[in-house]
Image (tube, rainbow, N blue to C red; front, side, top):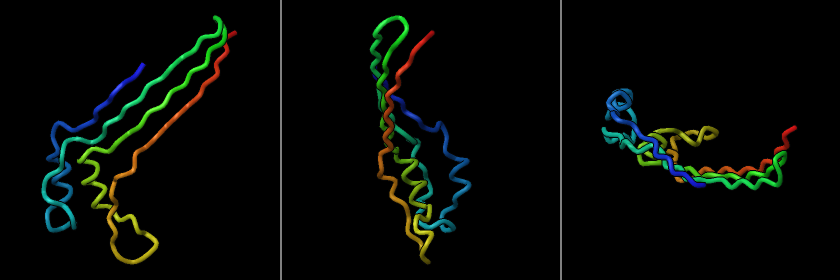
Length: 102
């Protein structure tokens, strides 16, 4: 079984009021509504009524709205100066589960 999840905002006005043009560097005045795209799936193998194995995983890709928010954050906290984040990394998660029922 597989799935796709889209997370977004219906309205970004409140977030746009929190970050004003000119006050926060890199802010263009408008946030994109797309926040995250996530794809994943799982496969379950039942050996008998009391034991099964499940493999699952997913990948989350940032949408343009989260990338815009990441660009306003300082990712270089150890050194002086501002270095914005890029938000280009994909989050990956995998799991193998062995389950027994008694």
